Length: 357
Image (cartoon, rainbow, N blue to C red; front, side):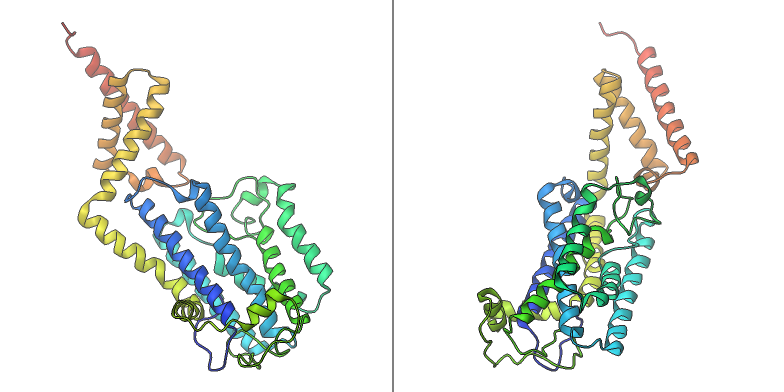
């Protein structure tokens, strides 16, 4: 996710297409998240294993391509001016994402997401452009695997969560920590350096915009790994490939703009149809009654109690407080008073009601 505009010289089509595929996949995932968040569908993609795997693979693709692009753009000589310009653009976009998500939901705003990670990993990755491949691969394995053996509650705090190694992640909509994701970036660096060593394309080719040298798409790659050779020969001339490549070249702009556009449109539809409020109320009643029946096995009481609680929440507009990932002690006391009041009212009504004949 390091490219934002078409380059004037030839690029490596396969990398642009791969980035474009990741962008399309990311839009699909975010669209599904928006549908669930606004109540259009009754499922949570963050709790569904196939969707979680899908999301992790998207992040992994962007991070891996960060390592690839870093080698192609700066593997021979670090070109500091283009690097810092690109770094500033990515970091600026990352801060924009943080500000936007904080305004949307301060409790779960994105403080170290994909763009923050790409900026940091690009900076850290410079130290490994000429390091021994054995060292890079070994460190990548440690970064990816260490979280299976080392976990500490300290890293669950927001201040340290960008490192990883937590036992439980803090509340945030997107978090891409050093452990394990910098290991994926290192694998991208190692894979690209190995590909260059096979001499499958001109030695001075680069992929990042503004690079001093670009691959000549008309030149034939020499012998080497068959997979890398086919990758180098890929021209991306079909219509789908050209569309994906264009999306890949504008990936940063798309990443920043797509979610506000998607959720803005869906919020407008939700407001017109009232589906969000209906789904939210249905989910609350279902959850409340399931919880109530475990402690008070009286269906009539639980139905009345949950209806009373829902009515109080909607009357006092307490949804933001109820859905907040973290509440203050005062807010907890207010919610407790509300539920106690409903419990007392329902019990009084049941006691005063005439017995059934």
